[in-house]
Image 1: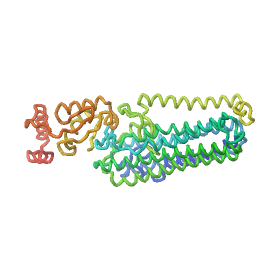
Image 2 (image 1 turned 90 degrees about the horizontal axis):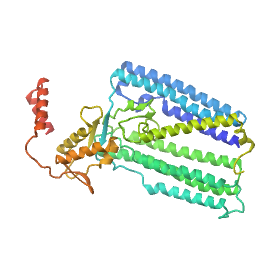
Image 3 (image 1 turned 30 degrees about the vertical axis):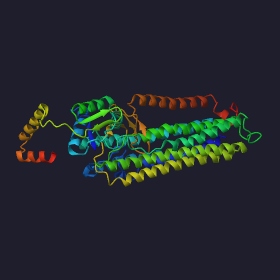
Image 4 (image 1 turned 135 degrees about the horizontal axis):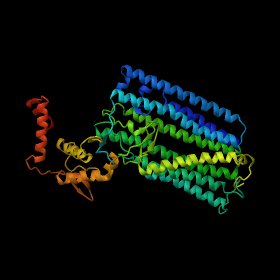
Length: 375
Length: 119
């Protein structure tokens, strides 16, 4: 079974590394709104400053490229190595290493550009624009549209539970292991339910002010929030339909190849939904670029390394991400502090647990099937 | 209507919001009867405490620029009471502005042009 896990990890890690490199370190940073999480400024393109910016972006991009290539090479090596507990541990450590290492050149670029801003005297912090007309009136998410797929997923989960407990009998004995249907369905259901508060939070993020015309601001924010609403709804439907279809399939077939294909199909579908969402978001940004006639607020100093938002004066919990797609939390918010600490503890704890299992040989039990639950 | 808040300004945030709403009413950007955001919504949007927005609305209500009630929230008054007299505080502030303009070498005509523009 572990060769399936290795293949899935390879398919997830390598494209992710390449996408992260392409988004965080574009080949033409001068044409982007943000460079390493620092808002672009016309003075970055003048005289000596332009040379400095080019040096910074080139050196950071080079470092990131080396890291990305190394991650891909190590992934290939791990794919070839025999499947055992140690290899699995190395995969997990590779994921964490990739995330941390790729952040280093990005953070370095962020700090150097912020220093350049200070030298050029173009730091303008603390200014916030708000459009009174569109405050709390711009929303795109229709709640029933995200509840419906989760209701379908819930129905599928109840069906799976009743099947596992023998209340419903589609086949004499399901091909999959006992309670596997229930466990799988509950996993997918919990992912779908998790997206409901995320969708609501995204729909209630601060409206960006890009123009002195309130209609332009309203249309821009509505269009942006629609891409997020469409993403979460599409994700919920993929989740619900996959749960239902896969449950039915698992009743008749219990085959490693089928399981692999199923998980790969799910992963690819989710990635496709995210990519479409990001493309739509980019289209909205491009469409409204020409309507931007307001100096956008400069809050670069509130973003640590351009990635983590820390603003004690901001009472919001979630804010739009600096780069990429989606939102992130305000670490200075009391709830933000709790979420950050819990997340860090969970990540650290999972790594420590894995190292412990590897050291005590328990990870190898997965390969031999010893102590595997529900067998 | 766009309002601009400077977190590092010497002017308190509630005064900044109050001043800009008054300017908006005067310029016609905020019309009589127009709904203003709720305290909670505006606080969330700007990212400040609800008490700050509440203080602003209380001040605007006291000064007769807006009216508030539980059902309809805050609205710009249709008919703002006109005393026809500049308050003592505003007179002092105007005196300060005129003094600074004079010291900066701004002529009376230029100042009058600006007043015409803003009026």
